[in-house]
Image (cartoon, rainbow, N blue to C red):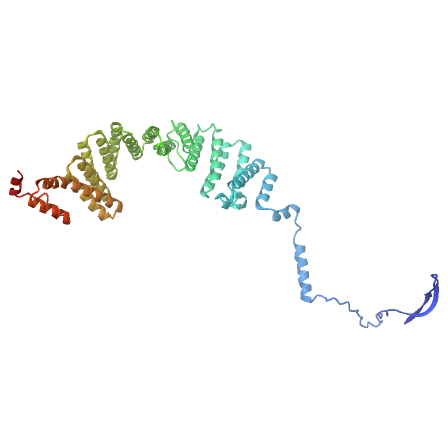
Amino acid sequence: MAAILPAIGRHGEHLVSQSPILLNPTPPSKSAHGSANVYVHTGKRYPSKKEREKEQRKVRLRAQQSELSKNQTSYYRNSYKHNMCLDMLCEGFHKSFSELFALIKMQNEEREKAGPESVLWNQELLENECDKLDMLREQLCLVENAMRQGNYAEVYTCRFKLARYFQSTNDKWLSDHFFESCLATATGIKTDEGKMAAEGHCNVGLALEESGDLHDAAKNFENFFALTEGHEDWIFDNDKLMHCEACIHLTRIYTAISDVCKESDLSLSIEFLTKATEMSLKSGDKQLHGEACFRLGSAYEKNGDPETALTYLNKYLEICRSLRDNAEIGKACEAIAKAFEKKGKIEESIRYLEMFVEVAEQSQDEKSISRACSDLGTMFNSLGRYDQAVDYFNRSYNISRSLNDVEAISSSRVLFGVAAAHKMVQNFSQHVELGGRICMERLLEWKDNRGDEFDKELPKSERILNL
């Protein structure tokens, strides 16, 4: 259907025109008798039944879920450490949060300081280890609660649990931190006569010893010993007596310090060994005391004081005999023989070396027998008793071969050769001096195949000829 619109004039006036205008047809209306509707196609695809059901299911599930709060949203968005710290602050544990945050910060600073080439760089960070963070949160919050109540024994217990836990996980820096905090807590407890403080000094001393700080470890062990004096009935959780343990720890740490300084200052080394011997005696452990006496006696012998050395070495021998330890008895006899040799008492030295051989034979210790025979051979060789020296060196060499001890074989072979040469040299020189036909034949025979016939008796004619 077309409609006629007026034309536009030159001066904007509308003029009547006969131009047709096309109009869109109107959609047919619904008939009164319910005839079908006619839809205009728009180009869009309507969802299928399956898609509509899926969308409806999503809507139902979304309706069943409660809306997340801001805190709940941040719980999924932030790290485990961040959320845990927020919870601690919200619950009012500000000191626990501060200590935990300080530990995490300390580890990060140490790691940055060490650099990417260090071992620390490859270690797992504490802030990423959820189990350890949970343990820290639990115990530190208990610590803070106990502090508010003034229950410092509970504070010590919780911190001690943390120290043991991190000791089991090989986190030494954390175990050291909590052992030190245990000691700081224990020094403020006055109701137990210093028992917790003694345990604290013991644990800190062990931690320092493991780190190689021997002198500071010794100071803590000395405090541990001082607190346990007069309380010999105090025991650890493992039923060990605290006073005895203090003596044992001091014996060990004094010995370790003496080993460090023995090359540079032997007198200072002897001073620490003397302290170790005194502590070992107080421990009541005979074997420990015997070993301390042996070390001190050997140090005096090395320092050129065999008389004092014999005092401690004889004490060691006495203890070994009471314990019926043949291996240690032989060790004591060998050391005493060296001290007598240094004093110039050779016969006494030989007596103790023979005792060493006898004890080693009783215990069937082949290696000790070989060493004892070698020592005796050396002694007889120095005295010019070459026959005995050869016998003992030969025995030492054969035992070393049976044990397939390469080092001992090389040593005993050389010593055996030296002693055999010394034994031969007198007869060899005599044959050279005599110079008779038979003497020359024997010398040539020895040169040819090293056959030793020099100890055979010379014919009477040869002896008379040279007279």
